[in-house]
Amino acid sequence: MRYLQGPRSRERSDASIASMERQFAEQGWGLWALEVIATGEFIGFTGLARSDFDAHFTPAVEVGWRLARQAWGHGYATEAGAAAVRFGLGPGGIPDIMSWTAAINSPSRAVMARLGFRHDPAADFEHPRVPPGDPIRPHVLYRLPTDGPRSYPDE
Ligand SMILES: CC(C)(COP(=O)(O)OP(=O)(O)OC[C@H]1O[C@@H](n2cnc3c(N)ncnc32)[C@H](O)[C@@H]1OP(=O)(O)O)[C@@H](O)C(=O)NCCC(=O)NCCS
Image (cartoon, rainbow, N blue to C red; front, side, top):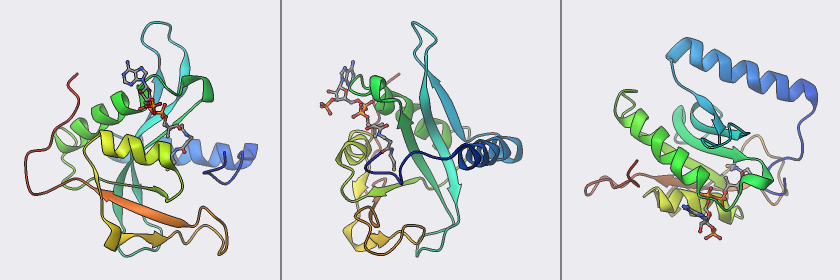
């Protein structure tokens, strides 16, 4: 929770789910629920989301992830993130996918790097929905390289 804005209230959590469902209804893709294949355990979400908060690169499509604590350290976010990016660039027909997170969120940045995204320091930004002075307000922006073949972990 230290890289997010604390646990969500029931009301805010319900609003997030409604927004996720809306994106599936409107565009056929979004933030997918994540299950461990072997057990069926629900461990969080990974996927694609449109964002339109006020920033120099928005509106934009982001690949993102949020996993339950017990699901960290197994490679699940990277595996699911690669599947989401493959879907987006392929059948999803999304020409550009980015990823962003709080600058201090090293685990999330490591997932981006494993997926082949590169930090674009010139594009870093202060997240407008995080209050000034909050340590998670400074954000980093990662992009897929355009100067060569994109490589993803194979399925
Ligand atoms: C961001 C987050 C998903 C990263 O989780 P993570 O477990 O570090 O990332 P992955 O699922 O890709 O797992 C990679 C780790 O699993 C390890 N691993 C173990 N078995 C593995 C396997 N079979 N294949 C690949 N990696 C494996 C890797 O070595 C790596 O560990 P390391 O970082 O110690 O080297 C997680 O920290 C999280 O949910 N945080 C809270 C929400 C959040 O911050 N979201 C982002 C907001 S922008």
